[in-house]
Length: 234
Picture 1 (cartoon, rainbow, N blue to C red):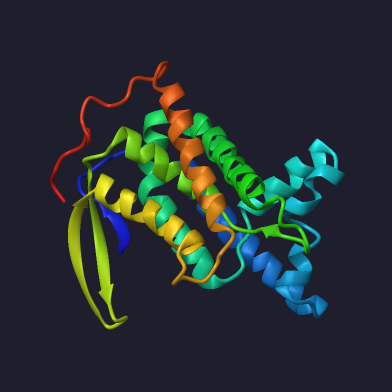
Picture 2: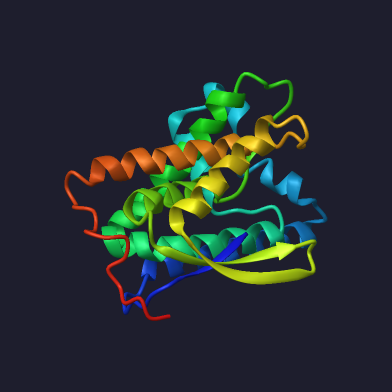
């Protein structure tokens, strides 16, 4: 189930969401070119620039901050990048409208580190080899958590793909999609029939960080009175 639009109109311009999206794309292109002209693999490039959760206890907080920030804006593949920015732009624009531009940017970075710490908490003890955090998925998961809190009944237009061939559109309430998404994180992490993908704990950490942070923020910025303050027109 791939979300691609929130039902309803808004005249708000999400400058930060646009800036983050462009930054992610430019960073990916830069890394590809750097690896190509340097004769390196992406893994070799990222090993020097992203957060290694197994090295956090051996480096300064400043190094962790820099590496962790870079990790939020880098991706391992084109598919990884595009899937993240699609989901981010769908949900992030509405959160930016609620928080304001600069507060949203701060929120995005904080929940990104929440994803890092979630990965460290659940998998930090498994350090027989380096474990690198690459991608904005933790930060996007935090945005999704905030959206669930603020707009649980907003209608999300999503495309359901069946057998990678047949697809059809549905307008599902946000809470249905988001609960499904959260379930899949646990399924892929602990399900015996699924491959073990450690980074999913980073997704879960980001999600709950976003949920907790927006709850605290709601004491200062009142949540919307309903699921969507916008027209129901498509």
